[in-house]
Length: 294
Image (tube, rainbow, N blue to C red; front, top):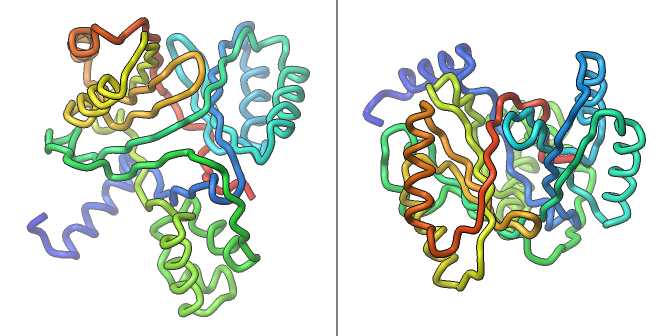
């Protein structure tokens, strides 16, 4: 970036202090550990302050919930759950519905097939994103065994991806060499995907929109067209392909309602031959984020 290490470090500290950088997370491939991830969108009603507090407290305490967001628009809340069996998902939903039947009007579940995450420079300075920062496919579940040392390391860095090796070693009571070796092995085997910062897009002057796309009959060429358009468009932060009520989810950063209208118009034009319908939500607040539920 043309600045000294000290200057870069100082600027990063200011971004953290100002809340632009909220946290540093380790993206863990739970599929390799025998888990399947589902995204669930909720429509809520009769929601007073007490009911809302209890609902989100439940989400924070539920070990299988790895991501929870407050939203506005077509849905009021979205979560991601990671479970090792369909029974575990059913048990979670049964408990949730029994406890919060008075406020859950409806919910929709989808399974992630693929995710492509793009670099922040694409949004901030319009830099062309030739390759995604991270690309993940759900694929078949594996069940790679983790011992207690691996688990301790992942628990330490799941929400502290920038933690120094020395601190990880102290926190886990492991030697520095063991921590380095095991972290390298977990990256090589694909258990650890990426280390990345979580940004508050509102502090950067953007709203975080989620566009849920339902497509008509679509070919491989059509899929490539959607992915290529998402990769090239400077506002798209990431795209996921899903199995469920929608086929794709676009996460976009837009500064104003005019930008939103322009984006939707361009999307309809570019994807006119394959777009059936779409829904829109705005992510407003992160309630929980933890990629390691063990």
